[in-house]
Image 1: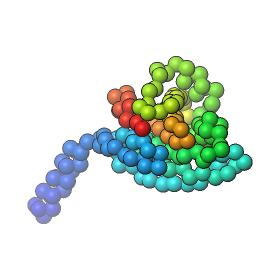
Image 2 (image 1 turned 120 degrees about the horizontal axis):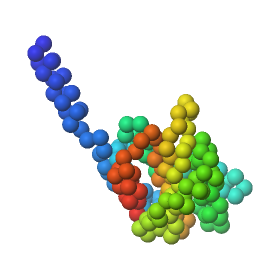
Image 3 (image 1 turned 180 degrees about the vertical axis):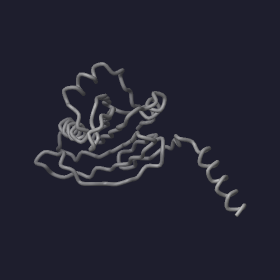
Image 4 (image 1 turned 135 degrees about the vertical axis):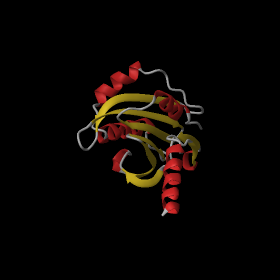
Length: 176
């Protein structure tokens, strides 16, 4: 019985010592970029209609949670002949709709954010707004989109309260 109690105490102590943020660099091979995330993400792909004529494109996604905050990154390559800017706008609109956020609010908020610089990117924009979870709870939403040639990466943070230092590290961790 003592051994079981001792093992339980050790397990609790080890769990208490584990870092809340466990930063790691991810290679986004299909777009030639890398990103920094604060936890071990889950990976998935899905086909989405972001292109002219509603043609489908593969969207790669990785996301993880730290407390009540979700850190997500997604990426894709726009095929030749498609309008990259139009696809990015459709993606941003879909992301805002998924977060139940207002697009006008995001554009107004974006004007107040500091310039986001991504190493190797031709374009990088961030949007900060309020959204809602599926249960109706209000959440803060931070979305950034960076583009280099036909490659586009989106970073997003969804949650109740983020630590500013971790938010900054997440945004600074994207590079081509």
